Amino acid sequence: MRHVLAGGSVLLLVLLALPAYAGGDLEVGKGKTIDRLGMGTHHYGAEVGVDDLRGKVVMFALWGT
Amino acid sequence: MVTPHLAGLAKRLGGKKFHLIVSTNPGDIERLAKHLRAEGLTEAIPGVTVAGGAGHPEWGGAVQVPYYVLFDHTGKLVRHRKCGDDHEGADGLQMIEWVDKLLAQIPPIAVGEEPYTALADVAKQIAFKKKLAANVKQLEAEAPEAEGERVEEIKRLLERVAAWRDEEIATALAYLGTEPKQTVPALKALSGELKGTALVAPVEEKLKAMRKAPELKSALKLAAALEKTQKKLDKLKVPKAAANRGVKTFRLDDPDCRKKHEKALAREAKALRKALEGHEGLPFAQRVQEMIAKLEG
Image (cartoon, rainbow over all chains, first blue to last red; front, side, top):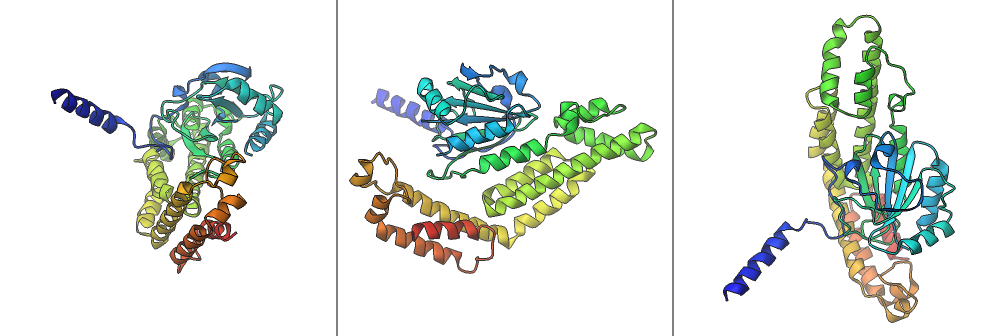
């Protein structure tokens, strides 16, 4: 019984910790900057780092096929 | 459907103050690269990067693709949305308009194209919106007693900031016709950026007026009605005939989907018509009318 309760508490904590987001729009606000952009594994085109992008408008496109 | 537009944007702006990073995350980068090349997004276009597994902690990956995220010249994340027109909440091809708007906002000083001598450092900071309010306050305080070339440079800088402020107010008000929920937050954010300066006054005025504006309340109601309809549509089952053709989610432009849910579509059109009553003159009414036209085929 104690294990079940502990498990339930963990699950509840995990659910509470999840962002209120499930496929919709996220709030755009402070601290959300290009500095936190992970560039992934370069495939083709220009090989750039975040510092190369300053002063430019940057579009990150998450695409499917 | 959206990829040719993305390729077109990259070709038009290639080598200018724009950079496009395309990624799949998670997903097969080889497959994506093949698709992108076939649609014309090749390595011959400057300012394009294709990478596997790129991402940003703010959106995690729990999104439906295609999805775009835009950063302005200061590196600030200014907008992110699903794009195309077959997903809930997608904004069509607005990404193109946003890129053009953000490009137009890059101050010449940010790319070394406008001379400042006495205030070069401050101008650069303002161009990248660093300590914006503090710098503006300082300029406003110095203006009455400034001498020499500082007079003209202070005037020019404050005019730049005022012009940018007016554009941002216009953008916030334009949300009334597209995403009314964003109007007040956009004005609040702008007010925060100019807090304590004389330039903030028109923003606060507009914010105060907008919070009480009946047109905003009505637009929010219409947007909620449209969202409700969209959610219902997203829950409609795809008939077998359409599923066999590879249709994965309910589509208003698919004849089999339409046929199967004819009554539901008529019901939703009727509900939207009712919601629209008395609000036909609002900018957002056009969005609702467009949806009604789609529902009624």
